[in-house]
Image (tube, rainbow, N blue to C red; front, side):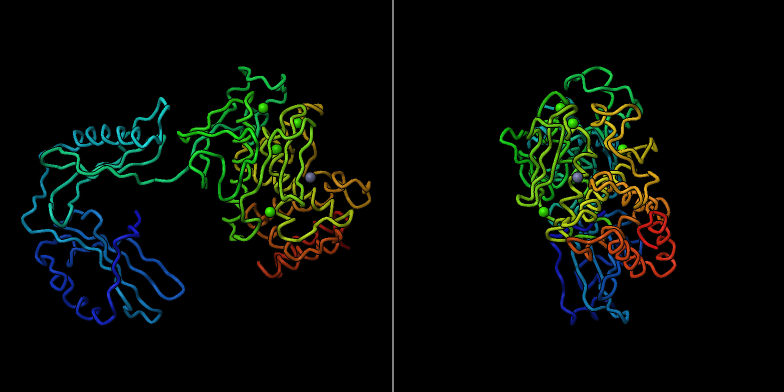
Length: 482
Ligand SMILES: [Ca+2]
Ligand SMILES: [Ca+2]
Ligand SMILES: [Ca+2]
Ligand SMILES: [Ca+2]
Ligand SMILES: [Zn+2]
């Protein structure tokens, strides 16, 4: 539960002493009517910030929560109350606490009201499953004018969560309010791709058909961070196609034989990648809407163009954007280009670019790959041009610098193999944080050896000498370092 942002009033420090001694009297609340705790406040959370701690309390009335009744004490680092936030409501002492409307009836009333609300605001219009289902029904008291006992019902549906207040005496619906009011949409994707999802190496493109065997691979996913109410334009990804799809219902339900499918897939691939990078604490790494042009070329190829800062995906064989790993490989280039202007200005730097793109796709697929050959890349796109098992490249080759061919994708396997072993040894998040952080120090024309030294130095700075010593041998094994 989170206290509401609005309605907080911060009192001056001068008032703190008075509140501390006779809090309820000072605020005009009935001091006698709060048996649950001495002062009618129940501690719900304590947070530590840079300047002290913040104790948040739920206001109670005869043991029941007061809806939107909050109180917080802000303590400085020496433990002294520096200010309080008082968002309590007045509740007269004659408000009843025994409901005449049973919980089940209240839940039913709330579900109906919430479903009607969801349809009215067009959050779920056109969907067959607009229905809201009650997931929690609790007694509470609303304060202020019209103070009374209510059932506080939280319901959930495809369009999000809704809170409904039902009068516990008259069964009247008092208030319906969305708890998750944002532009998040829902769309279907393959995650990370059908070969991995269905663990089936015999699936083929079949000329972009939506055939029965592949339909089991569709997954509904939340399309988060949208900033446009109807288009796939958000904080981290932006579809720039001239045939960009739109939806007024927050539902982007396309099959793979429709161009909208690649658009949803690319939007999703980039947004989850950026959100993951941010979750590592790296909040300034290509932190902008990534332009995405899907089905932009007929070739069986995709690319990131640093001069336009755009990713373009092709339609040769399997449409490239149907495979999250293709999009995320390209996003790897966009990430490095954002960290180091002009990155890739030498053959080895170019190979590091390809190796990191592969690595990023591989590490992002780990949670959803169910352990099905996680070192194999672009398992679905590559069904068009490889024999089973279908991998454009792998993260676990035995390559060393002795195997260099001068072709950046081939040589990228030398780099990605070292990164992958770091990932398998340190764990995914620890390794990813280290590797992406290290890239800030790369020169645009770096060498394998210089970049490897950056990774080791970054490991030392982030995690200490032991970890640095643990990962260095992976570069030695590849003859990148001696
Ligand atoms: Ca397609
Ligand atoms: Ca960029
Ligand atoms: Ca393709
Ligand atoms: Ca894969
Ligand atoms: Zn590439």
